[in-house]
Amino acid sequence: MNPEIEALSSTAEVIRTPCGSGEAVWRSWGTGTPLVLLHGGSGSWMHWLRNIGPLSRHYRVLAPDTPGLGESAMPPGPEPSPDNAAQPLRDGLRLILGERRFYHLCGFSFGANVAGHLAAAEGAHVRSLTVVGAASLGLPRPPLDLLKVRDKEGAARREANRENLARLMIFDRARIDDTALDIQEHNTVHARLRSRGYAPGDSLKSALLRVHAPLAGIWGERDAVAWPGVRARLDVLRGIDPGLMEYVFPEAGHWVAYEAAEQFNAALLEILAARGS
Image (cartoon, rainbow, N blue to C red):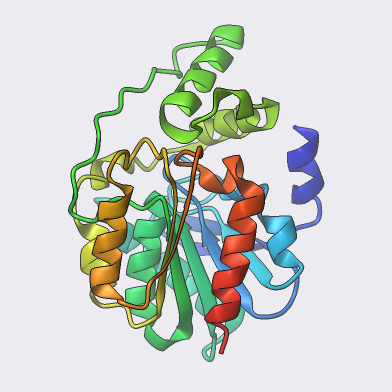
């Protein structure tokens, strides 16, 4: 395994909770007020590799593999959706944190969609909701063509992963390092739930209308899923919560928590401190 991934993974407490016909796999670091991080589509907890360490110095970080992705089983129901992916996570949080749970929630991309449905169901249990690179807000999504990877091997497969990261996830190709490539390979191998079909709709927007927690939004200015309409997405969120906290980082793409990790971590900590009362 990649040494950076192994170093962080080895320090995690691994928790398993029921999910469909199997289990949801959670990883936990740190102590204090819980912060739940939900990764992006075709992803895993590793989307937060560059964030967990700094955040867990202040919070108890819980990073599950979303049902149908990473090591977690498929969610219940015949048709996977953000709503039914959220349900096993809600049940898991009840087991992990108890009936009087109170936590911050942050979701990236498809994870933001799932987080919106989770927050809508959890009500007052959620102290704040931060969405990162979110789609499903009822706005057009730019067309994105990705290379097929599953039929490739060796160097050709790694280069296809690099190209896909450049097209979708990371704006500056120079920041696509070996760790990002190893994460992309792991996530591609383990993805079963197909999430891209939910991006053009308004699933997240509909869920946010039922959320009572204060909202925050974080984007990379050159997010391939939003460019050039990042401001329009923030306007949707501000229409739902006029007290929205917003951050947009220049020269960063969709996977802003990795590409601009230092700025992202500082922004999220600022959000959590402001929402902590």
